[in-house]
Length: 249
Image (cartoon, rainbow, N blue to C red):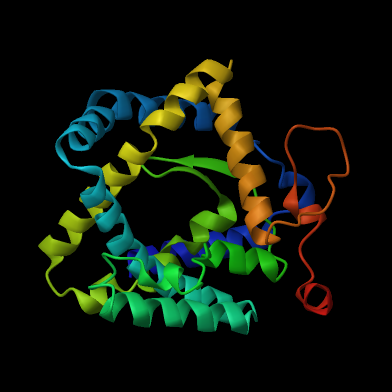
């Protein structure tokens, strides 16, 4: 209930905010402080856990667990594709869930990909963006990391459409799965982290710009509009996707 109220309040705040104020990173000092907090927590706790997990758990087992989690993630993929009017993609997501939940042993084996059913990556933040809601300011959330005002407002919807609370009754089991999911995802980023350390002079700026550009690309399904200026960041409110025009392409 509190999460739903928080999400609704953020939506109202986003609507009340003047367009000029919706710049990429107007609260950078706060965001940098939160980034430092998250980075410190990662270095002392999450990264060592991920390294130990990667060393102890064989790769096939990690892949199987990732497939199992992705089977749950296909539920919001289907819902958001439907909300965005992408009926073919939504049907494909439903087919993935059906195949992987049965022949794939609850999703541990990604049978659907072998049948040509591609996995999508959709969430309610993208759905809002598709229907014209601007991204709002960039914000770094405690523990959760990079986000925007729009994506933060969408988090309660993403949680309640995830399906785990409907399928798994035990709160302890759900929490254990969520914790293992975080460690598994972090373990998959260990190699990418090395490249980031070598390439980025300012990791905060690199991660911010990567996140914003990636979200823009996801909202527009890989075909974002050309930026209006030469800035290294963007304001999505200047070019919200026109769903009707996109469907005509």
